[in-house]
Length: 303
Image 1 (cartoon, rainbow, N blue to C red):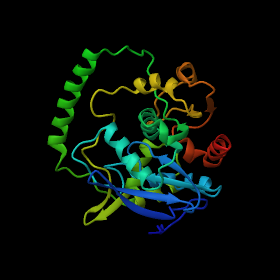
Image 2: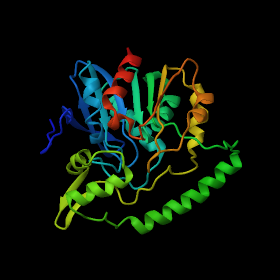
Image 3: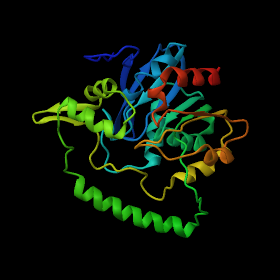
Image 4: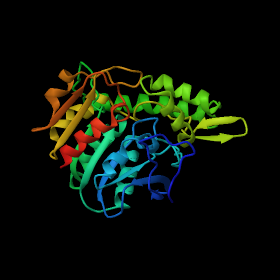
């Protein structure tokens, strides 16, 4: 299936192909920019996003010969909603999408949560990774604790109880409806540095219309963060163990979705011979604010 958009923007392109992947019984919407003959590349969107947010970035990679493969993470976009959510399930979904394209090692490129998600996948399936690009998905906290097994168990019990209580209350709820303009304005609070034209472009892709208005296609039971014992800095501590070539990109302008990470937080944890780029005047959505610059960095790195 080839996708179109009723009001495309210049230099923005919908995926060239869409298909559905069965991830242990859950239907995952997968997408591709570029030709089937291109070199595969796995691209992951951030939390509360969807693959359509890559429409300005993925085509730049595809135009240079890459077969850019992405997907709507479970509970996001056109992928099926799940009973529960956790990082390991997201990683299994990513593997199911990758397996539907190739059995070889490929570059991983992820933004925000997608960057952390693919770094975790790289840790458990290093045989499927040829290079790692993390786009502003480098979280940090100033105090990085040595988390004991006892604290992990305590966190599991606490977070399981909290999330199950929230799920019990939210499983029948619906997201607040609105017009195309009001949904764009609402998303603008999360993405204050993105243009109005881009925000309006995203609504018909990431939302659906019903009798009372438009709603984002995002499971209302989803919350920020992982399910179970997870802290962002744990991923940072694992980063030195990545063996594949690594490129990290960090935007310095803070906005609502930023991690608040500084270069000094990241540099001690970089893998050996890693490349680390810092962008001034750029917020969390580095690939949307400066798609050409970031794409050129990625293309040069992968070359």
